Length: 187
Image 1: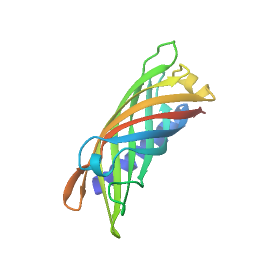
Image 2: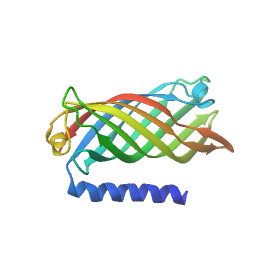
Image 3: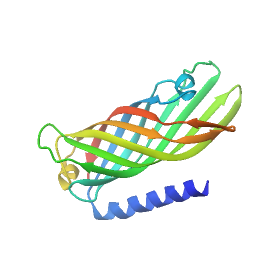
């Protein structure tokens, strides 16, 4: 638990320090989550989620990102079970300057996930630390300060994560594929 808290504090400090020196974008996100392994795949199923992200330009081609999503699940296999997944991520994105329809990017980082479950009146939750990779395209094409000057941008993305938590003595991989869209505002 101490290691996870230290990671979160370092991510926040790094974001705050970089924020003061560089242009930024705030992105609201909506995504579909597909767990990668059983039993989460069969018990949790596919879910829609919402969240946000802050991108801070470190250069014209490199961004620091910090984001969070929330995936509640109300319709599970068992009618009396409710679950939710909340991954918090931080990492580096590399933008590829292609002056066509949009700017493609690739990123890698760390994820800190919280999985909570309520079944038959018993609540349980677990946290874990893992990794994530991300790819997408920002429309219109932009890099560095140009992304921050754009009043509005569209972000189409894929995000894959791997994160194991210990839920009641059993290891559970809460990672998977997230496919979504984001709406960004530069400042």
